[in-house]
Length: 116
Image (cartoon, rainbow, N blue to C red; front, side, top):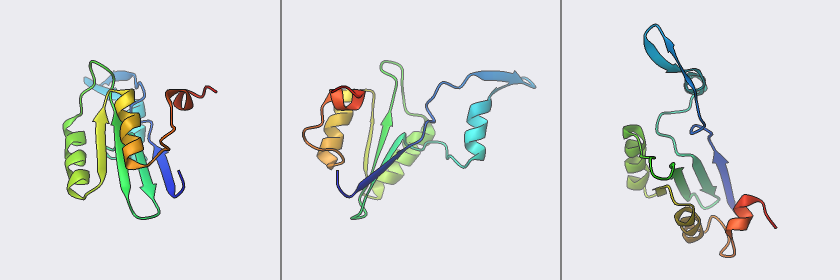
């Protein structure tokens, strides 16, 4: 949609862990921290020329739950008046993006999947 820019942080990727000195460590997770990614950051962030910001956190269906850090970030973003959604439902995510006007009303699942 005109006026919107977005970004995605691949923080939810599968990150195998190793045991180092008796502690479970994700090397990819440690690298993301060194790069400045804050715990609890939303997966998708949308920014409009008007100053409006919206944030989308996607969870694994059935087992995904927000962490304490994600709950803190969500509360902060909502208190600041930004749009925020944490969901495991693709349909809910699409409907929310439409309501926020981050994507066109004609957006369909096939658009997201790269189909024609």
